[in-house]
Image (cartoon, rainbow, N blue to C red):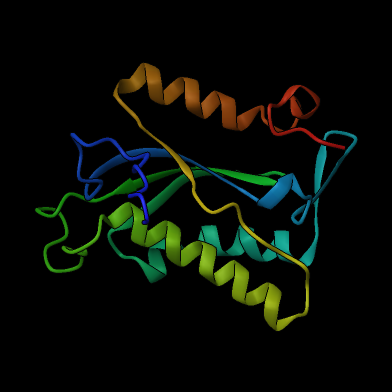
Length: 160
């Protein structure tokens, strides 16, 4: 028998409006996106494509806005705002949570790019999200993203 997998999403929130800090990792922490040399991220073609896709999220999902992001060698951190339904009527998915639709589409586009170009690539199956609550929470996360590259060797996702 199959056991039902417990969702890592908060059961008190529908993820169709709000501000979110999302972390998406590559499978087995493999450095598909590039490497950090002398405090600067040097992107592979897949990493460069990943950056462009994050910059264009609103083009594909008019109810979503990427406020800040960093692409690291083996993971991505992003702050995404999902408009409330009243702010963007008719354009927010009603069946699935809007955040999941955006993240799923982003992951799919990067995967398809890698496959079309015969690049080895795989995402970790899930992603981590944090519902941002208040200015202090938002500032701490923003500072974390801003300094992620310079703290790479101390990062929990660090691997050689």
